Amino acid sequence: MGCCVRDHQGHFYMAMSEWCKASLSPVEAEVWGLRQAMSWMQNMDQEQFIFEMDSKQVVQNVHSAREDISEYGSLLEDCKSLLATKNNFKVVFTRRKANSSAHALARKSINYASHTIFNHVPSCILDILNEEMN
Image (cartoon, rainbow, N blue to C red; front, top):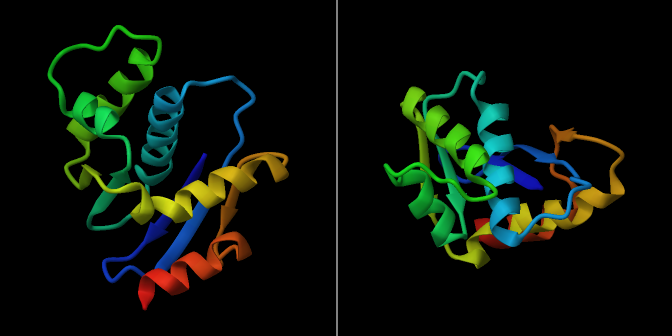
């Protein structure tokens, strides 16, 4: 799982990477990643958090009023609960290309022994961030 946090101008703030041993479907992995990112951000003192997801299905499901009883339903319900209680959280759909830094961090997560927080730009996303800022 990879998460890149940026400020309102798109500048790097921090990043997170975590490897999950479980075999997850792509949708389960997206929901798990969203829940991890929301949990990570819930105690941070920022005005607004926008979680950009490249899975339209996950974005629609997290905004749905219906209870999800799928394999990843409990994770999704956790996300819905956090979204309902944190009015500075917003989940939106974005194209995959706009989410490439998170995917690069997720691919690299297997190289880290545990949950890793980066307070500096990791080399695996440096070129991506530079390209996006230009």
